[in-house]
Image (tube, rainbow, N blue to C red; front, side, top):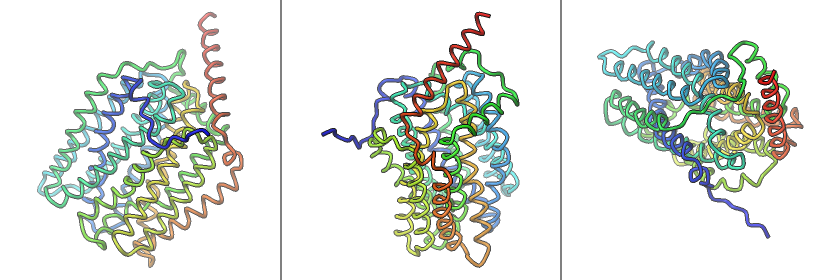
Length: 430
């Protein structure tokens, strides 16, 4: 009888020098970034005491992402992806320095927090597609499931430690010190990225243009398994993402120190799911797993809204985080195993919109709904119910996504890559 492996597969870290640097730098930088991710909403809540004002941060981030994710995707298919990622890190470090200076002011500017949020999203839109397109080039194709799990692990360690430390720092020291800690982590990530070798674009790459962007959109629309990953995740995050309410939920459950626990609890569940993700490499019904995991995420959020004790709230958030991580792993496998390399950057931009649009709009939804008679907790559990209902509706509307088998996706990608290489060689000889 064949033994099923449950533990995390570390093979990509052993076989790829460049991936080790990317993993280390990204994990440390992400740790600091999650500290700032918690601190900005807290600072807005402290200055305004209005959940809708916190939710508006999501709007400020969403608007530039809608444009820059396409631009970043097109650039990632034409330029050295490592240079784009490193340039983005420099820009994000500079924006963190602005937050530090603002926090040192005797009267911090609220408008500046929204501007920095928008500019950070702009840079992220340019950088993230290059990073996601670069990683599959650093490992062997058969190592992609393990690589996606490791990428998730780095993020979850950051998401677990960053918010927990943020809660302690916010309650203990001036906010300027919190932003200063994030600034220091960029020094590590920039050093690691400098040591990574160049990742040039595919041969005869498409020049960045509106036509190139449209080509990526047409490809995404032609693939039902890709559309399924986008729509299921947007639905889950739009209805089931209550992070804009965490500062107010923390007030009900214990204060600023609790805030860090609320942000960290989903990461605990995600980390446990990632550490036991060895089984994902043996599962080929990827679409079905995404549907199941999204529904379980919604169930966990329902529990958060109905809970009135800290320990049960944290348990439900951890359960939701584990479900979201399973969904994220299988969505990443679908993306990495099915998309040809010459379209990888543009499709990474579309993917970025799918997994950021939902949470950002979800912050606005939860903040606006919390101002109604439902209140903070009502906004959360009603959103969870709508998440489960929407997931069920999408499962019925997308039967090909539900039946998707990963073996077919790998074969399709291989054929598409070979066809592109042959066409490029023909063009070169003409």
